[in-house]
Image 1 (cartoon, each protein chain N blue to C red):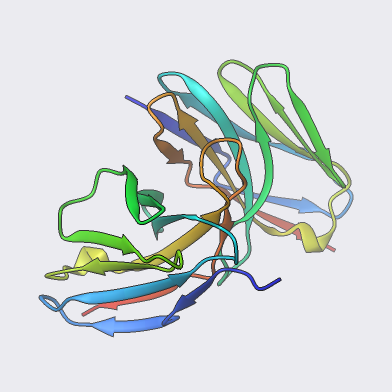
Image 2 (image 1 turned 45 degrees about the horizontal axis):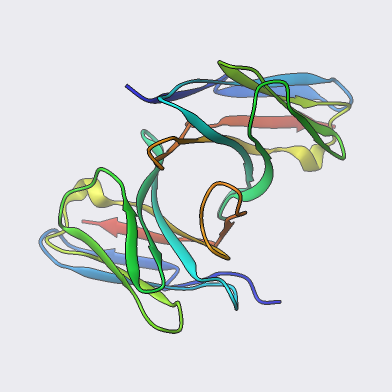
Length: 114
Length: 109
């Protein structure tokens, strides 16, 4: 069974640009969550999508947005990039989300903002 | 304020030297506490979910326990392949998920 895949794996952008990251969940999983991981802040929850609807959202500015398609694939967009957005962006999928559901993480996209 | 704190930040053990990692939390309503293992360059890998104080779960050399204020991940007779960063996360009653910054474990042969 294929795991969670994320593309691209590495990305370099400059301040002010925008970026779109992609996540393909495990087949049959309908919940996709996004996280930002930095050395100083650790893992921080961005948002969760389930059946194409944002079900939960962390404390990030509106520059961070996402969406989910009918096949459960998800994209995350960051507009007007700032240096502080440099991080590892992780996507995790689960069958239906929620505390009783195990999340499976992808390898992440390493974003560097110059 | 909801908070998850892990200690120590880093831990070096000799192979076979048992120890414990700590995850303390102050949150408004605990729905579940999770332990993950993360290897360099990879996403976190799920280990355990604990739901209520007194609960314990085991997997190979790892055992996770939960009290009302903290969780411990006990590592018995660790091997070099147990070297990784161990992350703790708490889901609150408001459906928010908070992660600790992790404990970086190194097991020396």
